[in-house]
Image (cartoon, rainbow, N blue to C red):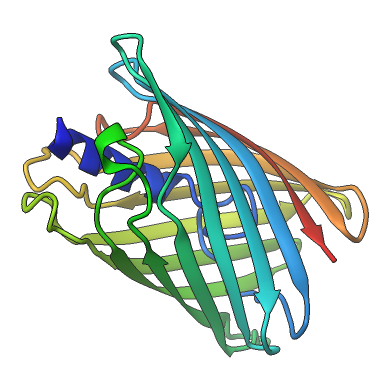
Length: 248
């Protein structure tokens, strides 16, 4: 059970946190800008193939240290609804994030950025709310505008802490997303992403497709919604997400 919980939490941490502007999980090369303060808040519902369900509430404060460097913290509150009818809830493992813009977009070249993520071990391991270990990740990111569309992609690697479960392994990650501006206020989004399963005995790796949208309420507030479908046995069968982004 401990081994299953470790892999489950690691998958949840990969799926749930806001790796890019919502609701995309694909990272983008943009940064907040010097002195800018932003917040992202969201609710996620995940249902796995075996009937296990999970709800995540995510809060992400973001601060632009310079025009090229931003820092953020990903704070999650999790609810696990187990197949036996029991429920576990509490704070999940916190992510500490830094993103650095290496190169701005040119006429023929994409913007490039690097992102570092440190996952803490504060979540309750015994309740399945944390992996019980610290993990470290790095992402290489590219974004390119093409007419009314913006393409985003990343490749990444997570060094997984294994002191609680020696069966876990490190995780390569990839994602490709598109943001299409249907109007000045409404954007349509899609992405595919995946990673290697953290459980070394797993026979399938997580793969998923997301379709979503954003609606700009004002220069300060953006609403978003999305739905994600897994197309491997290792992914949640379905994931709904709703959120809001604010710039101060």
